[in-house]
View 1 (spheres, rainbow, N blue to C red):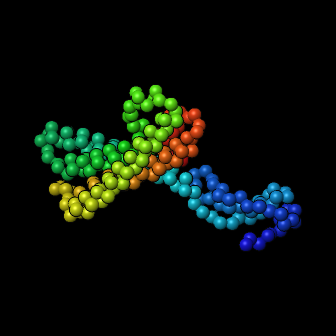
View 2: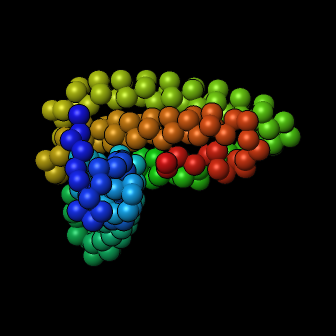
View 3: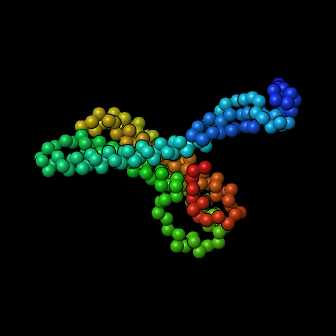
Length: 217
């Protein structure tokens, strides 16, 4: 039970609680006590975390990591081409470029899936009624969800199998490359669940396909 405080402004005990107040550029939420008589804040209760803000921060971090990885990938490949022109062999940069290629490719696929930027063919479905389009979308999302679970299961098995195998020129195990599939599939599962949730919320509404495709809450 919350002990009723006296308002220091009006001296009354009438109060209420504002829950989960979030602030810009912060992942934390705060519960405030305010006086219902004068409307002023008189105290603070629990401090928690805004799951939505944390998720958006992780999505932004993923975009930054993917962009940086792609820049280094292009740089290593270009450096290798220049060195080969001068007959200088450096195998480590090719192996590192292959490592970055795996991570940037799968992270980029996850970003595209979350933002609805993957290429799709809707020659048939766009001619169907809105309700049937949403049913087909839900079925496809469920199929994709099952496929991602299978990818995670076998990806973990493959990562465990290749944990002792490393690149020839750099001491990086192949399991770290395989984990790019697992990490990306986990993120895609979250995005797919959000797409299913958004589709169900707007199932009886006449919304555009772009709004249904979105994955960020």
